[in-house]
Amino acid sequence: EAGWSHFAEHMILRGSEKYPSQKIINRILGRFGGCKNAATTPLWTGFYAHVPAYGIGETIDVLGDAIAHPLFTQSDIEIERNTILAEIRMMKDYSSSRLSQLVNESLWPGHPISRPIIGTSKSIASIDAKSLKAFHRARYTSRGAMFIAAGKVDHDEIVERVRPVFDTLPD
Image (cartoon, rainbow, N blue to C red; front, side, top):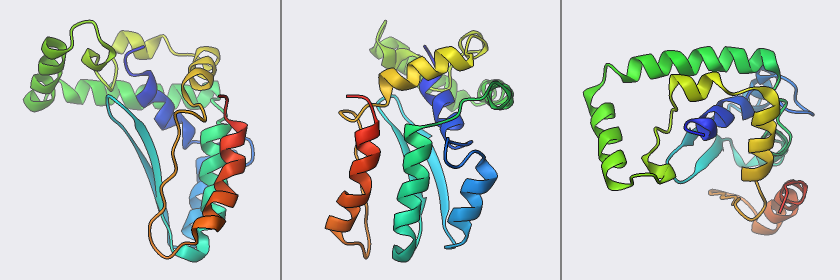
């Protein structure tokens, strides 16, 4: 499953049941002057948005739905597969990336941390909608999730808005 978390990260922000396209998601966050992004490390995947306080409610709804109910359409999978395969080819040109991967393989032989975050051409080629949905159900759980907010926000309001998102995730 090398690269599957990274692949899921790409796919989650492409659309959800309630917000079926990346364009819709970007338009909603753009109304607040906001932006979103994501990152995958060997230990976690994070999704974040920068928005003013008055946009936090809609932002939680949009990102929450994307994380809890991603579409994972085969057409989007093919688009992201090509993007990630291009990233893999580019990574081969960066000696620091290759060195980092060799260190991880040496320090953590056989452990998931030893696998390349971005995946391999073979592992990325094996991903389809059905297997990615199963991966998502198994990995994106309420026990493994956390929500962080900073700035001029009301803690109780945040908890009230985030709890329903967590309640839709599997345990």
